[in-house]
Amino acid sequence: MARSKNTKLVFSTEFGRACPECGNPVDQCICKEDTGIPEGDGIVRISRETKGRKGKGVTLVTGIPLALDDLKKLAKELKQKCGTGGSLKDRVVEIQGDQRDLLVELLKVKGFQVKKSGG
Image: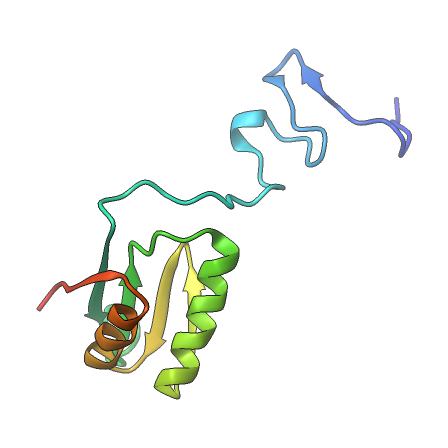
């Protein structure tokens, strides 16, 4: 039996409650992004990594206690200040190149407690 476009699945005997937007089980819902501030110790950690990038280094910034929208704005600003590209993946800001010293200073000015991690 085909469902019309106006109906949405809210319960299934197979997996229980379903998200009305995406139809997945509620615990596996993918339609609403996490906009809350993550739990953590409040320390922003900056490290350098080359693994899986054919020897090209990137600077990783983790543990920033901001909501997702604010984190996107901060990532864009950091990339502009460094003059390089980068991305935001799973709440981790990736900046191309070794920019650790510059990022430590920029984030301290913004009021974050910052530590260099790794080697």
